[in-house]
Image (cartoon, rainbow, N blue to C red; front, side, top):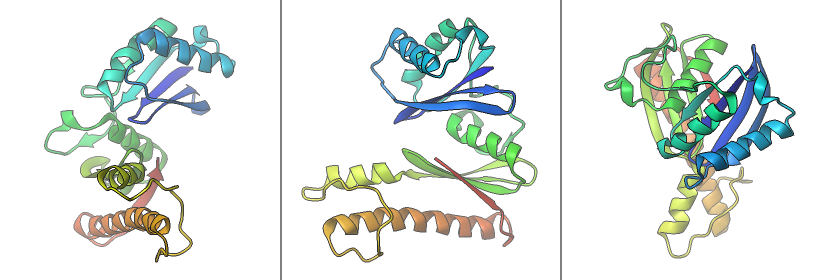
Amino acid sequence: MILAVDIGNTNVVLGCIEGEKILFLERMATDRGATDMEYLVRIRSVLKFRDIDPEKLEGAIICSVVPIVTMNVRPAVEQLTGKRAIVVGPGIKTGLRINIDNPGALGADRVADAVAAVNNYPVPLITIDMGTATTVDILTSKKEFLGGVIMAGVNMSMQALSQGTAQLPNVEIAHPARACGTSTAEAIQSGLYYGALGAVKELISAYTQEVFGGRKPMVIGTG
């Protein structure tokens, strides 16, 4: 049984994997100020809640886009499991061919998305991960990662509007009843929803022509 830890800008996602089976997934807020001991207590509490005996953990793997949090989560995980944790990054064999300008700078989240996609779906394909940031990436029929797009996620876009203006409020992110909002809140919701949807659709269309010669690849969404 393996402990998997995904450290994102907003949440830390914990899970246990046994063979091909995911036993559970739990989320906790990413805390840049928490110490390794605090993370140890939190992770141990999650495992206890899920009735997982830490002594049965054979190892751990960490995927992170927040290095300062990795510095504290990694020793916590290693103390919990008694084994050295694998951190997704340069030097890890994934089976992918990374064909970008600087492979060492590729985010661990995009690597993990690509590896999961090619191991579960036929290539070529496009992966879409909608988190704090939204990434839209390309994988060829030869399992070659060609790169893609990083843009602000829906939550980040909403925060930019509310924090960068004097009168625009935070709103619930939801599918609006209509594209043409008749109130400020509805207009923001529509902009967030259709803006994100339109950007993704346009990127899929552009990739289809630019990379795949008009042949439509499979599209995988997560987030």
